[in-house]
Image (cartoon, rainbow, N blue to C red):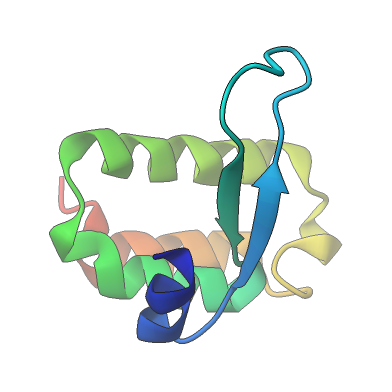
Length: 95
């Protein structure tokens, strides 16, 4: 399923199986990962289809990234304020 999703959105890496070491009796899981500007593009495409819970998760991740990653490392050196204002302007935060 994740492999099909990865192809549908145009990228990412599927990792797995991943075992929870704290709960070895649980079934393994698989993860889909995408980073950098490619991740931002996928979020932009999926945003209209995300529910409030997933939108809140995206916003939390963006806030964490902005507060923890040095400016020069933000999405391959791009200016994070410019990226954030572009993100806000492109229909995500219209408040």
